[in-house]
Amino acid sequence: QVQLVESGGGLVKPGGSLRLSCAASGFMFSDFYMSWIRQAPGKGLEWVSHISGSGDSIYYADSVKGRFTISRDNAKESVYLQMNSLRAEDTAVYYCAREFSGYQFGWGQGTLVTVSS
Amino acid sequence: DIQMTQSPSSLSASLGDRVTITCRASHDIYNSLAWYQQKPGKAPNLLLYTTSRLESGVPSRFSGSASGTDYTLTISSLQAEDFATYYCQQYYSIPWTFGLGTKVELK
Image: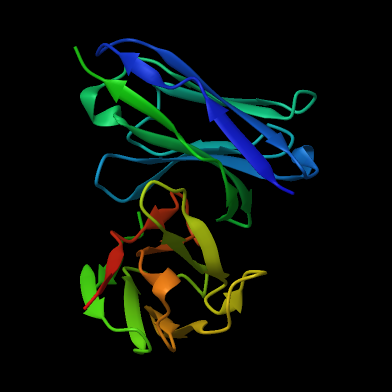
């Protein structure tokens, strides 16, 4: 069955960097867009970025544009989120999800990113 | 960006109740609307997409409809496992945007 496992979260100081990974299995990875969606503590969901199956189409939310970079390695069936210049407001659980036509079906368990001094 | 205004933010209901949650889109989204259920400490789970299409494995007591830019999630007879937070999401225009959520609690 579809499985998505995020890793790489942790505590980082403001201005620091972190790289999240999401390992996928159970489906034809290269056929699907993959998304990152985050949820600040006690808050709602915010779509962050997505990348097409081939990697040639990428979009970001304005809140992360220029600081975050999404990428994927289809041979490793993994998607990544490089996060630079982190701010306190980036503190959240980050989920990766399989996307189809824009909706998310199949989510990972999430990885917590805490930005604090 | 398309704004999704979800209401109510919370509601109290009893087992067996009919529950309705609404999302209003700031622009026409042409039925590009999904609903998710999230339980505490867990990832969201897709319930419906394209307004009214039930995801595989989701009970038929969940249904969706639309009227203009208003989208509705209905739970026909609330079960114990349905107490959770529900989110709508539009996927007509990037950036995809979510409603703020509706927490369904036991009365």
